[in-house]
Image 1 (cartoon, rainbow, N blue to C red):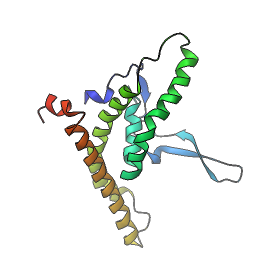
Image 2 (image 1 turned 90 degrees about the vertical axis):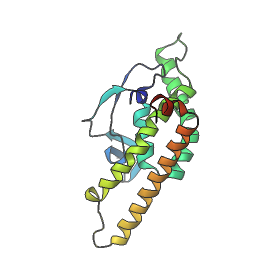
Image 3 (image 1 turned 60 degrees about the vertical axis):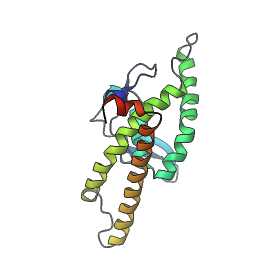
Amino acid sequence: MVEVHADIGLPPMLIHGDLHSGNLMWSIDDNDGIINQIAAIIDWQTIFEGNPMYDLAKLVTLCCDGPTRREIEHIIFDFYMEKITVEWKKDNKKEEMPFTKEKIKKAYNYAFILHAFSIIGIIAFAPAFHNPYPENPTIREAELDISFLSALHACQDADKLLQGEMRDVLEKYNL
């Protein structure tokens, strides 16, 4: 989907391509406790040049349940703009910011739609890759219930976007 790389005025960036919680390593404190700071991002075998919203949408879609993702999506674009503006001004003293929160959100929405529908396939294969409690199948069943509900919420939200503000995508591809 070309739209995943929707132009928001940023130069092309290096995109991880498979950003999810399993590819994040967390920092530890002096007592060997995990802290809320990323130490490293691993597994860079699917990198490509593109739009950073691809990685952000994948991380949020795959790693959050529906209510958490929906809550994050209400604050993440303001946060992103705040942080990127600080960095932009460091390197571009005289140039105006070439993109807006609206452009970032639109690029995110394109990527979100892609990830929302791909999560169905990911969940279909998840049991083959993850079963930490083989002696207690009820835990695995509960984990799958959470995954299915997350996928349902993502697909519902993608459908709302495609029926609403991104209806032009449906029309463009005669869907």
